Length: 122
Image (cartoon, rainbow, N blue to C red; front, side, top):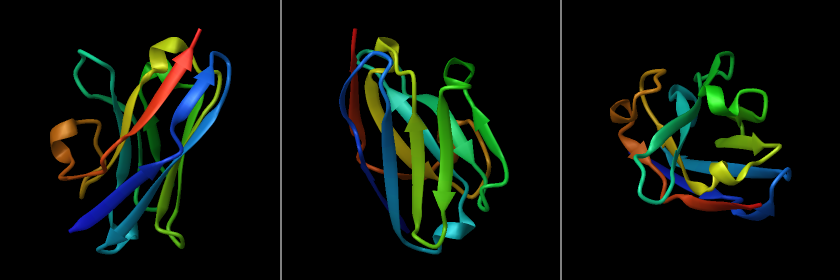
């Protein structure tokens, strides 16, 4: 089992920045590719970004490329999502997830955090 806890969400104006954190416990964090997903009200949960077990490979949804950066510190068992140039359409609950495979597919991820709210005002 892997337990995941997100933090760092909040209310920010458009153009601002936030950094989300995902703290992991349980099984060896460095064994797992990790990802961020988000879910806006009335919408499906969607892929945002993923990172390989050693941080060497990343992948992003097109809408956040150039604005968001995913990273991880295996010594601290923590993953991050640096979000810059935020837009109102980035408003959602953000979830971190862990998997045995490097994937954009939600069903590939058996372990999830509880989510953290990000609200971007215009």
